[in-house]
Length: 150
Image 1 (cartoon, rainbow, N blue to C red):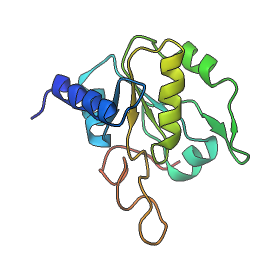
Image 2 (cartoon, rainbow, N blue to C red):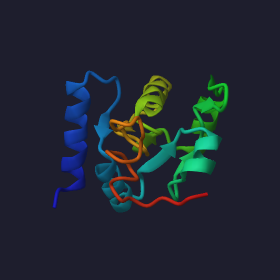
Image 3 (tube, rainbow, N blue to C red):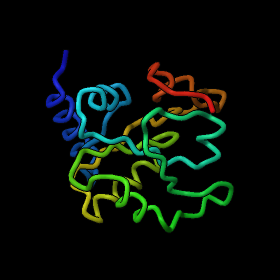
Image 4 (cartoon, rainbow, N blue to C red):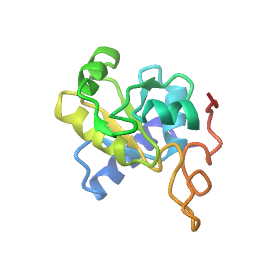
């Protein structure tokens, strides 16, 4: 079994290969492994309240929406809420529906003093399949990781 250090190194290399401006990019199973093994690591779910309520939640994740439903306007309090709830020097993993908003959140956090930011690739529901539906090909749910329906 891969060590936490090896997983983080792979995530860091992935981020370099993808030219990302933050520490690393993790697959859902990798993020979960580290969250289980490290008391320091923190998961921040940046999906909207509607997504959390209707699609499902990840137990133990901090929930700080990056954009508010239905307008999807930026949450102007995002960085303040993040700073008040999350340790700036601990590993912080951002997750959203597909990995796009969490990428934005990781960039924003890195630019404001968070030193150990990671994006969870694929997000909670993953990519769309040939029918345009998420939650079947990739992501946290498809990986069989813990989540609860609201």
